[in-house]
Image (cartoon, rainbow, N blue to C red; front, side, top):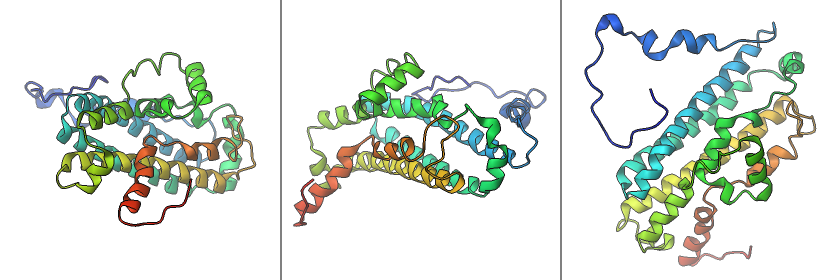
Length: 267
């Protein structure tokens, strides 16, 4: 399957005959499963590899769907975009659960093979960074974040001239309706309301994924132990909790509360 998503439903042609096709060949299982190659004799390295392989496969699909959603939003194809955006929230909910599984790897077991991983770090995941970039984090993450992405992956930012965040707000602007009005009169704008809620859910799931990643790291090695990538958890990981793709949707909750008489503290 091509990595370039199709934005329209098109016939895929006649199915192959039974002697040309099977579950194994369709999923390329020989290739997929042979990619798992432990570098230590420790049996618990297997769950470490399995978890991260699974996450990378999900990130690949998240990127695939994001590339479909952005042109849908640009074309005002809200029903289709909402369907896929809702799916991404569910994928990130599932991805978040991977940390719970990885926490069954005990701290002493991890430390027994961890020295072999020096130099390897989740920060080197191109796909996860690409997800952040497509969602629009470069517009909000600050100069240091942008500089680090440009240094590690030249051309990645330029590959996405329109991000999910930009496509979302461009569509809202075209609707000539404010976010507050969309929420207040949500049943008059059901598709826009669903879009905002799906974007919020995606952001919320990423926040949960980041938070539980920190808890997993804290459980495994502590926050004052230097990671294999050379950073300390309390410095790098904790800083990422401030990353949001749609901070306006979070701030909107104060406006909704105020609209209904709620008392809001000053920022």
